Amino acid sequence: MAAAMASVARPMSETRLTARCTIYCDWLVSLIIATGVVFAWRGAWNICDSLLLPQQPLWSAAARLIGGSVLFVVACVIQPSLAAWARHHDRTRCLWLVDALYTYLSFWVSMLTWNGVWYIYDQVVGIGLAPAPPDWAHARQGAISHALGLLLLGSLGALRNSVAAPMVISSDAVAPIFGAGVTAGVGTWLNPFERLKRPPAVQSRGDWHRAVGVPVL
Image (cartoon, rainbow, N blue to C red; front, side, top):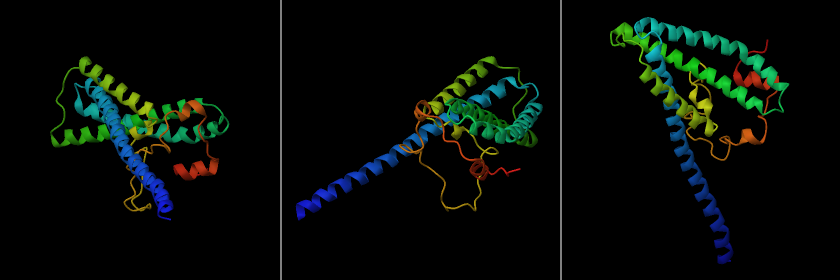
């Protein structure tokens, strides 16, 4: 009897240990993803600092905010059309590429909006960047950082983590409380090789609109 109970307890203990190790790996991957996001954002930020009207910091900040706002409208307008197109091409792996390109557009929406608001505030309170000539060396370093961040996120199948508000919005009233995700989803949704094996899952029109929050017109 005791031997039988021990044989049952051992697999249960091993299962708990495996689950705990998976969570720890999840946390580690989450930190790696965060590093990739920082590299991508900081690199893009440096490129703008170096080349986008550096002689006129206030106009540079305004151009970023305007650019981010315009791209936001573009992203919102084309989103339903892309989803409708995907439903007619749901058996092709090229959807992964189109989704990645849309995510990259969303990245620039987020980065330019944040950067523009940030620098306009700095200029208003008198702590903004000083006028300077274009700095190509700094821009090259920014491009390297940006590319490395995207490469890391892309290799993990986690490009969407580079996107923030206004492209990703969440309500404090949405359950669960204390429900912000902190795990990378190792073994579940985080599967960088899924794109090589099969096309992405495409939702029905109604499900897509409910998930994204765009009203059905």
